[in-house]
Image (cartoon, rainbow, N blue to C red; front, side, top):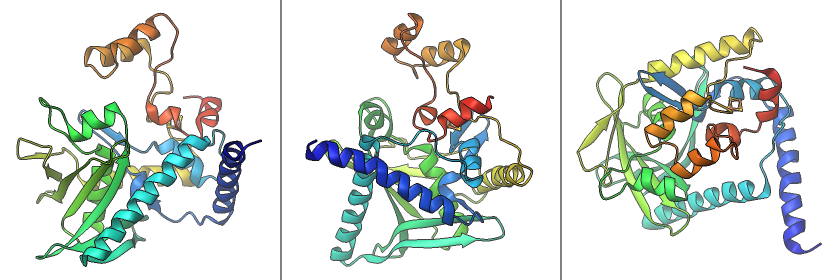
Length: 287
Ligand code: SF4
């Protein structure tokens, strides 16, 4: 066995050990801001309620991530700590990994960095990803504005609502070539998130939901936990035919993927399910 095989095996083993340790120690008293989910008008994004329910119920992970996913996760953390180091060296860092918690609403979070921009303190949330879809969506194209990932906007709006930091920078790095871009997030008077940034050419974009919508979701999810009621799936493990047709027509499914699906060579579903650590448990428990 060579070095790569040894580490690949150990990464999976260590992850399982860490998860088991966390599972035993976990005191389930609040949701993370990253657990947020919103469904409003035609907007629908965030973490699946059923996956969080399994975590709160100490369900054993049925589909642990592979060594590749674990390395990707670690790389994201390294990029984040490197960037925070640059803020420190630049003399603008006020604090890093700042935790907050609201016991009444059972929500908590951790802000990557607080910096002083010469006028005021603003929050910074650092994200990284890679690939064609990420580039198109976040960096934009010649004809289309870039836009942050919507679940990241939801996460940041929670930070603004629950702390006294009124403005955040959401900064993205492409892990392929380390290109970067940034967005600014504030809440308007009603509490909708307003996003501006270099890749948005048309000024700013306001999204149709508020923190109250996220709070309602957490209240429902908490009731599910207390009443031992498994939430319905928020995502498709496998799209029904009409959903594939709809997504293909709107351009969300590529022609190649659509052709493969038509020839029954491929199953199409939401990416969250393909990467879900509870996929087999979710299949076992049905819709
Ligand atoms: S497999 Fe999909 S629907 Fe099921 S818990 Fe995971 S993310 Fe939710």
